[in-house]
Amino acid sequence: MKRCLIVTGGGDCPGLNAVIRAIVKRAAREKEWEIIGSIEAFNGILREPTEIVILDEKAVSGIHYRGGTILQTTNKGGPFAWPIKEKDGSWSSVDRSDEMLRKMQYLGIEAVINIGGDGSQRISQKLFEKGCNIIGVPKTIDNDLTATDSTFGFQTAVQIATEAVDKLVTTAASHNRVLILEVMGRYAGWIALNAAVAGGAEICLLPEFPYDVNKVLERVNRRFERDRGFVIIVISEGARAIGKDFSILSEVEIGNENRRLGGVANVLMHQLKEAGCDHSMRTTVLGHLQRGGVPIAYDRVLATQFGVKAFEMVLDKEFGRMVSYRHPKITSVSLQEAIREPNLVDDETALMNTARGIDISFGD
Ligand code: F6P
Image 1 (cartoon, helix red, strand yellow):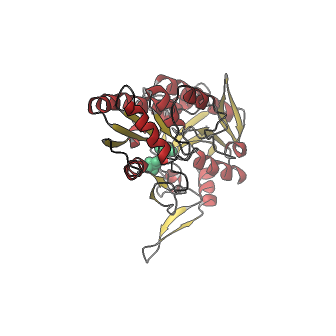
Image 2 (tube, protein in one colour; image 1 turned 60 degrees about the horizontal axis):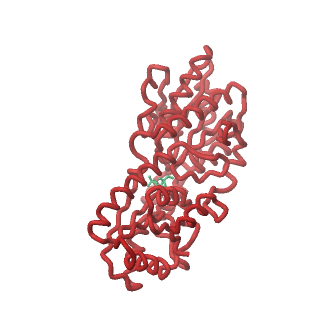
Image 3 (cartoon, helix red, strand yellow; image 1 turned 120 degrees about the horizontal axis):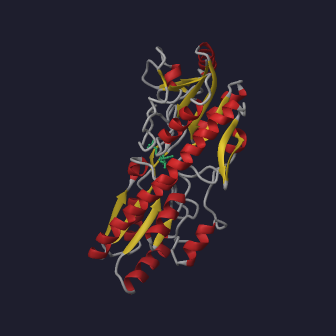
């Protein structure tokens, strides 16, 4: 029997289980393959005793509509930066990649499918350079990967954010308020932009377009002077005023390359107050609700396509590559290309033109 290992790394994302199920079901059609999963990203391999599970058709039956990942995940640590607590309580990290590769060889693992975002795919590339037969599957609600037209989980997050806007409208209209909704996306404004257009928000503030508080206030006032006296502002967690820094909840930690963003909705509310806004204002931070629950049909379909393609890439020995959706094809790109640069909103983005066309303000 040949063994293929599935790993889910980084933040959880609606559709992960649909990818796992698709890989297992596709592999079941080839008699000589056994699929196993590592618990909590690569930690399952690195831990002693090893934490791996056998994934047969029974194990993945009916999981396609379940959120999260049956394999669990983490965005901390990993084979190249395994966190170690020193005697004085401080943290350092060690590279355990060689040890992990030896262990995988001992376990008879011939191929690895690593489902994750940019951080996970950087790990995939480094493992590939060390001789690992690895394939990447892109995963992120942020949609911030250039190497694929779209990632599963993103549309579910947009749907949840849009429903939140719809709900906030009722309170905003009843109380004549300015309601500010903070959504995820890290340094990419895709979730905010899509939810603002779908939800009919007046103002949308994105990481890619630092805002001028006075322009935001001007638009708020204009809206109150006209017909209806309420405003919905959708703000991306990575947005910031011109000349100001990002709103950070915690800095980079050992084993976690990302700063935690958050709190910008409150920052904006105070900036507006200081600039003279006297309307009643409230903030909502949508947070992890955007990653939770059942994936919408689009994401289940895309996730299933990615899973089947990933295993077919194992069969074809297309290692060192990541599955990619380039409409209308499910294809692949080299991992190196996949991690080269992030996918950000810019003025060339068709939806930006649409949004400006319906007079959404970006505070710029
Ligand atoms: O990358 C997905 C994402 O949800 C981002 O939108 C967000 O900034 C981050 O992960 C939150 O990470 P955590 O779950 O570690 O707080």
